[in-house]
Length: 325
Image 1 (cartoon, rainbow, N blue to C red):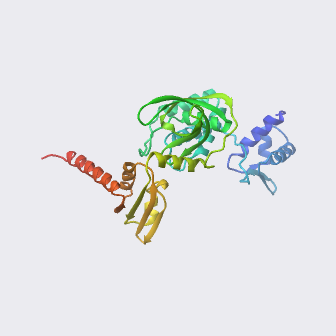
Image 2 (image 1 turned 180 degrees about the vertical axis):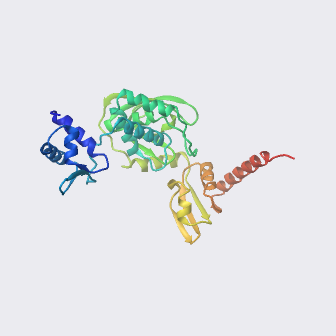
Image 3 (image 1 turned 30 degrees about the horizontal axis):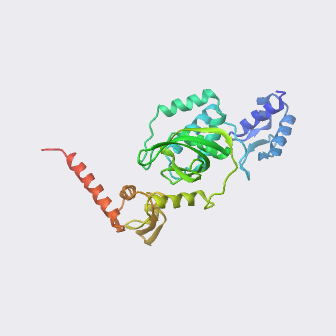
């Protein structure tokens, strides 16, 4: 193999397999001399790939963790698996899957060959994920289109359906995507309204990057998450929530979304949640019911009312399903 760039890519692909490669085996695989392998290893190191060499009669090379993430070479199956996984996570706003994951998906889909992109779409359409119902399902292509526009500083057009059902066309300068752990929001400057706005991504359709670039404006709060929080508090009043649980803090925390806030241990087998939320109290009631331990709501009374309604519905459903006779 005389083409040096192609040989380096093949060498890198081999080294990214988690094993140690004897220099002689690499030379045989690439049909070059061991001396050429040593030179190519030095070239990879110069490019920032941390290749470690072992001493001995045979000697070997392996790629190790470095201080930075070098570019990865993925085969077809690996690329499809990662794209499907990222799509599934991004499309349901799973807690912990944030903007960085959507950016990764956008980058991957941008370079996927058409044949692999088709395989990803086919597999995605042929499977149904089991989700917890925490938020609306989102088309991952909508997220990746928005992420690309944010990164490229490109104006974005889309159709938007408001909470009351009114539909409008928007043209914005996208600033950031923000995940609350169960929903995605776009923070953007609305050109027609000449002001900053937040948009629920599950209410967006037909996003289109216009190709028109823009210079980033300064966000009033300086932080997209803070801007979203303030925007949500204006739309829906924030309420103080206080709930005690008959379970260890780590046990309860593993069963509640982090968006509800931190838990305060009050004993070996008890803990307390004190937080201020602008989320739907119906959603909070459902999440508390999934805590898998006894709990007491101290405030607000509206949350107690939602729990009573939920408990009544569940009781009636259980009674109607009971065998007769």
